[in-house]
Amino acid sequence: MALTPFFKDIPKIRYEGPDSDNAFAYKWFDANKKVLGRPMKDWMRNAVCYWHTFRGTALDIFGPGTLVRPWEDGTNSLDMALKRTEVVFDFVTKLGVEYYCFHDRDASPEGSDVSETNSNLWAIAEKLKSLQKATGVKLLWGTANMFSHSRYSQGASTSPNADVFAHCANSVKEMLDVSKYLGGENYVFWGGREGYNTLLNTDMGREADHAAKFFHMAVDYAKKIRFKGQFLIEPKACEPTKHQYDFDAATVLGFLRKYGLEKHFKLNIEQNHATLAGHDFCHELAVCNANGALGSIDSNRGDVMNGWDTDQFPNDYRECAQAWTLILANQDGMGTGGLNYDAKVRRDSYDVEDMFYAHICGIDTWARGLRIAEQVIKSGKIDKFVAKRYSSYDKGIGKSIESGKATFESLQKYIVGKGEADQNASARQEYLENLFNGYC
Ligand code: XLS
Ligand code: NI
Ligand code: NI
Image 1 (cartoon, rainbow, N blue to C red):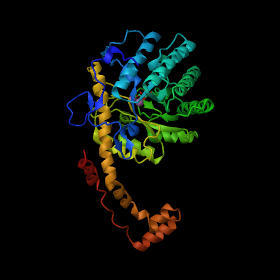
Image 2: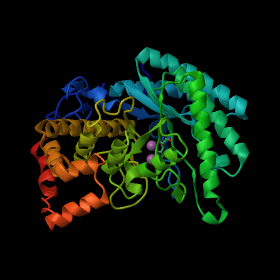
Image 3: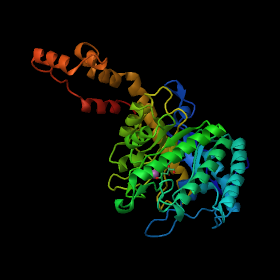
Image 4: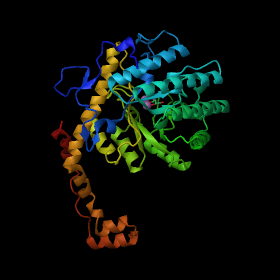
C-alpha cells in the first residue's frame, strides 16, 4: 500500500524497551514477545477506533472542534470518506496495530434517503476490504451508529416511533452484512440513546420488550447469513440519556436472561463506563467472568475528579495489571475480543503526532500491565490465597453446602452443636495490593 503523505515525519512505531528515549516507540509492547505462552499481541489484540481518532473534531458544548486534520476537505462526502479510509489504514499500520473498529456512519456518510445511505456504505466496504487485504489489518468489530441523527433523539429500537425501529433494522442488517463481508470477529451493540430522560413519558417495560425483539431479529439474521462473529453488548450507565437501559454488566445479563438471549451475547466492557456506573473497571470484568460473558474491552479512562465520559487514553498500568489477572483467568483471554482504544485526544492536543502519542501510551499501559500480571500470576500467590480463603467449603459442612446436601435443619444442628462459628481469617487486602508493587 502506498502510504499517504500525512504521517511522513513519523517513523513506524517499534518496540525499543523501557530505556528508550524515543517518544515514537513502544517501551513495553513487544508484539511477539511471549507472555504466559502467547505473544503479547495475541493477548491484547489492539484496535484503533475510527470514530474518535478519525471523526472526532474535539468539539464540546462551549465551542466547535479544534482538531483540523490535514487530510479533511471539510465535506462529509463519499469522496472524502473514500480518501479517509487510506489515512486510517496508514495510521493503523504505522502503529503496528492489527485491528480497527467502526460504526457505519464513521466510515460512510448518510445519503439523501435510506437506499443511498446503504449504497454509500457498500462503496466504503469495498474499499475497506481492499485495504484490509493490502495491509493485513483486520476488523475487530463493526457496529451501527443509531444515536447521532435526530431521528434517534428518543431512542433507536426503544423509540416510541415504530418507523425508527424499522430504520434501525435496516442499519443493523446492512452492518451485519458488511461485518461478515469484512471478516469482522465480533459485532457490538451500544445502546446509544436506549434509555430515558423522564419516566413521565416512558413505558419502560414496553421499551425493553422492543429492544429484546430487536436483538432476537439480529440473532436470527446473523444465523441466516451465517455471520460467525460474537455478538457483544456494551453497558453504559448514563450519558446521553439520564438512565441508559444497559446500565452495567449485571443489568445487561439480567435483561438477556429475561428474554432468552444469554447464549448469543457477551459483553464489551468499557473502563470509563464502569466508573459512570459507580463501579471499578475490574468489578465489571469480574461480573463477566462469573457469568462466562467477557467478550471484549473498550479501553479508556475517566477523570477521577469529575463524573462523565471523558474517554481519555488509559494510563494506569496498575489498574490494567489487575484487569489482566481477571482477563487471564479465562483460558483464551478475551477470545475473539480485544482492546479497542475507545478514547480521544484532548481538545488542545492539536497535532497528528498527538494521535500517535495517545495510542502508544494506551498500548504501553496495557502491555506493562500484562507483564506485571504475568509475574503476579506466576507467583501463584493470589490464587493460593483465594483458594485458602474459601477452603472451609472444601470439606465438612462447607462441602455439604456446596454439594446441595445441607438443609437449614442440618446446618442448625451443626452450629448449635458447635456453639459458635470458627474465627474469620484476615482478608489481607493490603498484603494483596502490595503484591503488585513487587514487579514492574
Ligand atoms: C460511547 C460508546 C461507543 C461504543 C460504540 O460511549 O463507547 O463509542 O463503543 O458505539
Ligand atoms: Ni465504547
Ligand atoms: Ni464511551
